[in-house]
Length: 425
Image (cartoon, rainbow, N blue to C red; front, side):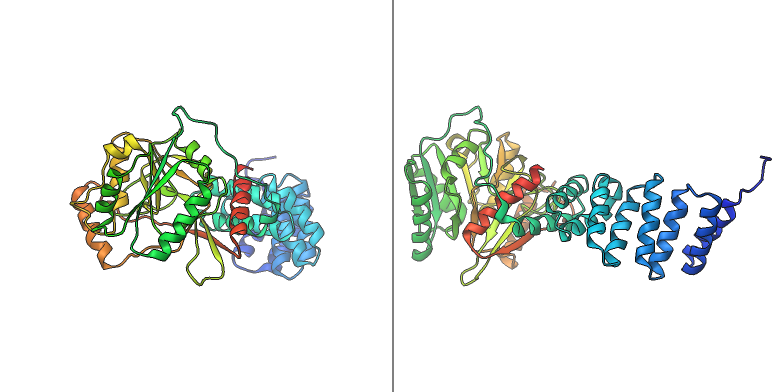
């Protein structure tokens, strides 16, 4: 062929693509057909025909064109689009078959893998949907909607969950022989409920509960409480929590063989005056919220990592267990944080900087009645934190809290077990 000669396919291709860009879909289809006549094995030609037919209200024709493109070596988008077109044509079985084929190359779809995952879930391909969504969430930390869809999927499919979350192998340190709980509480009813929870979950496990009913601040109360403890594991916790996992005690003991501080929510990066300031993808923890009078539990997951997330740099103070030597080395700063905010970020970040190992446990079934108070009083202590750590001055990141609502405590545990299974693949 002489230089500069144009094949019969090229004008049709160029005109078809131009018509598509200009939303002249009937013209695009005519040119696509001419392109196919000149170059019948071009997947791009068949794909253009499918796109035009979809816009012109012929989903079945579009689906067949997409599948022709797929059979000729077209990319995974051809199978995905074929599934969408078959569904629009009222043929869910052929739609599901096309989506299953697309799932094999879902990573190539980029963020469109979210739509594929949701489509597979709708088609009843729940396990395949989970794999597509997890792959997207892991490779793209900004795919917030994928994580939200995964949590929803775990809640919906909680009935298929295994009986228990996995437990990691023992770590290098000996497990605690006595747990000492330190609780600052002025509320008799809340303290009684927490005491019952501890007695139930730590039945047969040596433990004690030290109550501070008159703390001037959480730092002051915790330091005073620590001085009264005898245990080699100290647990600082709020009085409005519950532990749903029946085996919370042995799980916590196992976690403390791996880490010096174990919380239930935290961050692997600290950049400002809040545990969750850095935003995603640095946040971890599975915490459930159940406000008094609320009929449902709100199961929240900040990441797919479980049951124990290591490499943590800061911990939320709702529940923090630590080895006694670590607690003694890093006391609470009652002089600076003489109220009820930022105490947790300060002490955990200092522990991290001192070389202690921090981790987040996702398998204790923690339930918290409150989501926290972020008013003016907290801002005052945030300013103190900034003064103490001026290097932590980054702009606030974007935290995302993915939640699903379920009716009972048993459903909370089942949802978390299913989430762990989905995350593990």
